[in-house]
Amino acid sequence: MKGKLAVGFVLFAAMLWGTTGTVQTLVPEGAHPVAVGTARLAVGGIALTIIVLLMGKLDLKSWPLKPTIFAAISMAAYQPLFFTAVTMTGVAIGTVIAIGSAPILSGLLEWLVWKRRPVKVWWISTFLAILGCLLLFLNQSSVYVDPLGILLALGAGLSFAIYTLVSKELVRDFSSISVVAVVFTLSAIILSPLLFIYDMTWVTELSGAAASLHLGLIATALAYFLFAKGLVHIPSSTAVTLSLAEPLTAAFLGVFFVGEELSFISWIGVSLLLLGIGFLIKGSEKEVPRIREVNISK
View 1 (cartoon, rainbow, N blue to C red):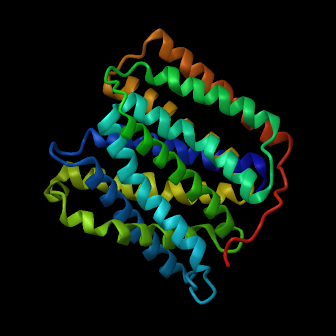
View 2 (view 1 turned 90 degrees about the horizontal axis):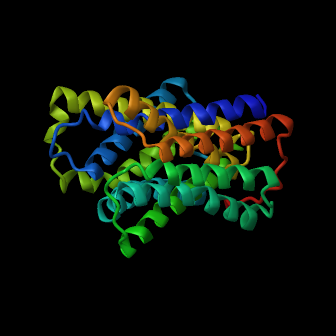
């Protein structure tokens, strides 16, 4: 599997992430977004662990502790940071800053840690995709500029960038499914105290249980497994930029299934997002960059 298939895995993972917004409309009223995110990680982590154990692929004897903890903390931190940021500063600003900052931060971290400067096509693609994301979310009516909310959104973007960077290190030496199983199980354990803070009775309702299963099994377990598979063969910065297909998918689902309407400016944003992702796919087909990596597992 080389660049083209790896890109396909990451794009499909992002499309699965993009279903979360539509599925969350099925969650019973009163369910706190942080509680939903915690349940999502718990279901996904448990499912992945069971699968890995049944496959007999879990060998923790030589497992690197440091990067695993970094990845687990990053994924655990992303959930409350993102949902709190959206609550404080609005869906539009919070989402754009969190999702839009992740590719830039990932590229900078890759440059600093792996000493690899992102290629020209990545800069162009990322600029177009982030601009498209910004225009797309101008369609949202709730916009608040809260300094703390913006800071939390940046923290969410940094968390996802760190998770991607460290996961690439892990999938280099271990199977993708083992990596996501271990990381997400630890992330769920880290967030487990939140299950006792927030009301979780919504999970017992049919719609709540169905939403939790989709979010955990499809939008988490399957999606992050595909994302990890793709990371084996493409740079982390490229993978994070490709993940901007998530808001694009969410926008299309909102239009076709929820009945939302996009403004003319938002459709321009959709076009720029598609253009940016298309450039990056074309660049990945021409060349699969060889990354000079450093070992952070010690």
